[in-house]
Image 1 (cartoon, one colour):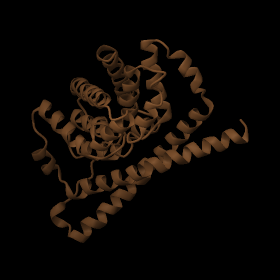
Image 2: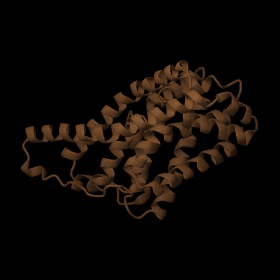
Image 3: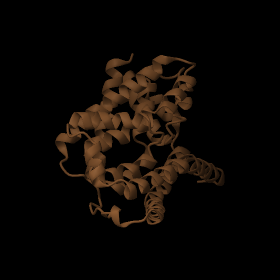
Image 4: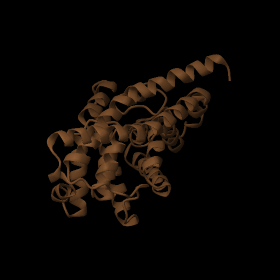
Length: 292
């Protein structure tokens, strides 16, 4: 381990933090707003009782929500704690980093104003979210949070100033709660990017199946923000097939090193591992089946 490698790791680590922090700050602020201003009764009225409609409405909310895969974790945790069904909350968490307009527009620009990659990325992501929500609704009957205690806020007893103070208090607590996992995840991602030879991955991924799997592994290791990953994916167009590129774009926006660490700090380990396995299999299978 030489000085140059450490400097490179430090640069990657700082770049990941700078890229992620604005979304984390936005996420914890919205989490604080939900905690103070949104009651369990309001959630019950908004979320449809029908499981399918609740998932579809959550995906619809994700489309209009500008967040990355890290910033969405604290919001998801707060929604589940407020009573949103696990399948609907996870559908929101997985869809928001991919299906929002900024990510889809960046994909369109990165691939030379091509709509095909936008449709492939959006369509595969939508299908994966539906599959995952369906599986979770049957397999897990509890909210799977590590800390299941819910702090109830008596909204009618608080003045507006009290609510604003409470909102910032909860946002700060949430920031320090999820921030440490972001730092650990970013450090791991930087170390792996520095010391793992990507040329080895490129050599392995020459077949159709191996190409998709390798690009998914690469997206996991690189831990890119979903708003920028399309530009990196487009640089591999001469090396990998469209199927492999879509696998890179979908899997990396749902799961990477830094948000895995954050999820492990939020949800039970078995749930996170199951979620990761289901997403990996779904993305791999759908991209191989529908994209040449």
